[in-house]
Length: 234
Image (cartoon, rainbow, N blue to C red; front, top):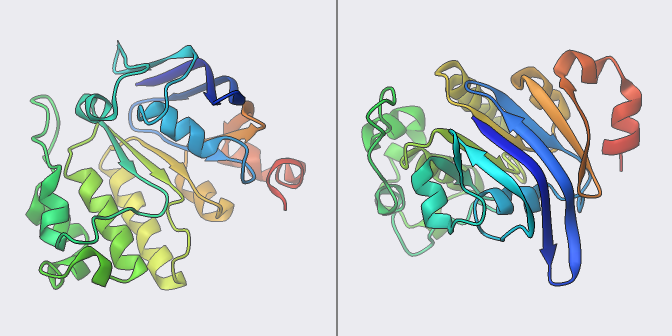
């Protein structure tokens, strides 16, 4: 579904990604793991057209999307839940959800609509008239996920899915992502909670200094504690 090969991305003269490769197959949940500053967010920004790679290819559902502008990437079917949530502070919950909504593809399954998103995130139902900056962090994250779902994505990307959230809210987000996986939605996810990711994901990709240095299943990750010590420890 998503195939990234040889991606090289720079900020000015500073190279961040070095021949980065990754794949996400239909129905899969795949994680990007690594310490801060290793290139995870830059990978997401490259996928979404927020920064243009200087080399490499990004193919999605059989079409090359390398270097396309963000609106075109979104139309192609990639939905982003960005780091820091970035909800529109001066729009209401309802307005945040419908502002960038788009119809589902003809060959897609059940479409994401406002009622369906509100069924998934029931706390938002009571906050439809509240502005984005009046919400708690957990409500903002629910809104950010709901906003991405309203674009009816073929692949959902989450950057720091539960960062800064209270434990009960984090648990709710993980339950939600498990439900989305069960519904068949492919997900590419960044988060620091390796234990929760291991329960959810099919495969993991560890990034070190802008390169994919390891990929494997949750069982393989758990069976080799040295991996976490070498690449994920502080």
